[in-house]
Amino acid sequence: MTDISTTQTPPAKAKQAEEDRPLKPALLRGWRRKCPQCGSGPLFRGYLKLNQKCAVCDLDLTNARADDGPAYLTILLVGHLMAPIIHVVYTQFRPEPLVLATGLSVGCVALALFLLPRLKGGIVAFQWSRRMHGFGEDS
Image (cartoon, rainbow, N blue to C red):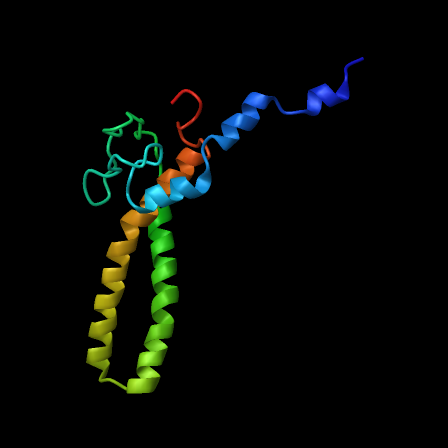
């Protein structure tokens, strides 16, 4: 008979593998648009184009797959931040419709341009932290 306690206990190596990539520091590095592993090298070579690998620690970034996640999160955040602002500005100040539309359009575009690369960095950092999409043991 096999001992049940030894077959159900996770190996120490698997436990250590989960702990050696903490989520919070990785997300903060991604928000700063830095490499999630070292925190020093730039994550992007353009506005949203990822580098092939980190210039400092040689982390391979070719398998990172952010896809549409940053765009969805950006739309969600911009919508939830700007909707109350629209309500407050309209009810308190009653600006002309063209002034309201112009001002809030500029605000929405500026906020979206600010958030998009930071959220993409956060998603790539999350993938690295959780060993998803090629960021596993062999990387």
